[in-house]
Image 1 (cartoon, rainbow, N blue to C red):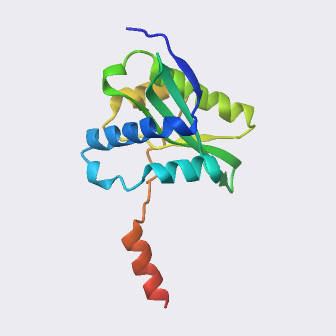
Image 2 (image 1 turned 60 degrees about the horizontal axis):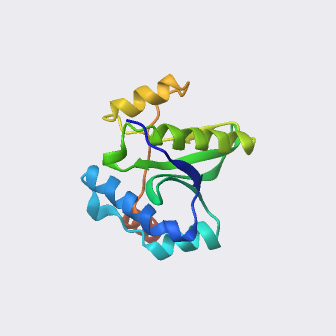
Length: 161
């Protein structure tokens, strides 16, 4: 099934739909209670502070997918683009929206002259892994993603005091 869509840079007024997509993904991942970000955070960080860029898939005036990226710095490669999330509404999967958003991210990276695009994919997401590998991406199976949550940060700072 293919649909008529427009991939474009997100606007402030798209952020409620972007937040819906974030919550939809969290629900899918059985982690709905872990979403702590608010609409005001997305607007401030994305449009006032300009900490990220967001692309959306607009289908007949409705946001059906999004890709959120930001620049990072690698001591090996220099400036890179990090793809934080690429989300397509469940009912719209298989329509080409995900691939179109992915291509927009790669194009954005190319236009900005970065040496690497990086992201994390769940080992259980076999369809995404196969898609990424078919585009020439390499899955780094010998690297671990490390997170320290707010509680861990606080505990470590308290040890320093």
